[in-house]
Amino acid sequence: MFWRKRREEGRVSEDSWLIVGLGNPGAKYEATRHNVGQMAVDVLADRLGSRFSPHKTGSRVAEGRLRPGGPKLVLAKSNGYMNTSGGPVSALAKYFGIPADRVIVLHDELDLPFDALKLKQGGGHGGHNGLRDIAKALSTPDFLRVRIGIGRPPGRQDPADFVLRPFASGERESLAVLLEDAADAAEALVEDGLLAAQQRFHGRAK
Image (tube, rainbow, N blue to C red; front, side, top):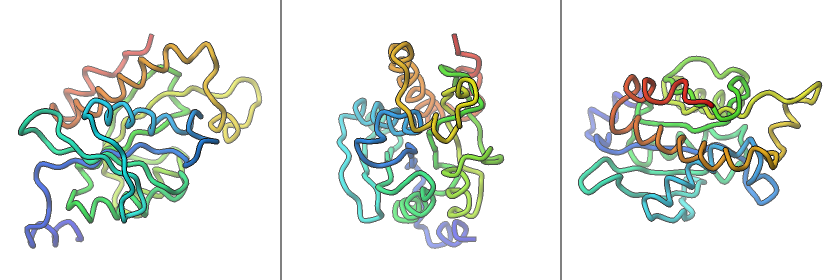
């Protein structure tokens, strides 16, 4: 209903995309598995030559275009915690006039092996509280997702503890490539659409 009203008012942007990297704020969390989405958005910002700065919606935002005359990208990292990602994402979407089907969320995924990527639109949250909160705040689950595999914890380690730990030393070389691929996947969603991007990136794990 909200987006229909915005379109009727002519306030929905037709060439802009909101790309959100999920994570928790502060140095304590920035290198943890749960923040892999924010790490990938940092890669995108570097490519655009753009820096994140505070935005009144409660996020840090960087803006740019993939190419001259190309789609505008609004990159965002919430100043709040993962479980409360919905409010900032919804506020940004409304501020920039971006409908839910042009929102791309990059996030960690326990159900994928480390170094795997999967792309989807809509569906459930799989126990991911950040996705749950975003779907609630947008009043729809039909945003796009770049699911970045971090794997399951070893042995009987609690998944809640696992996601808040840094990547192992043996994973860090592959992590750099994974982040570049996740950034590539977000760009492909914008430029080529979901199906073409899925065909390119699914099954890319080593």
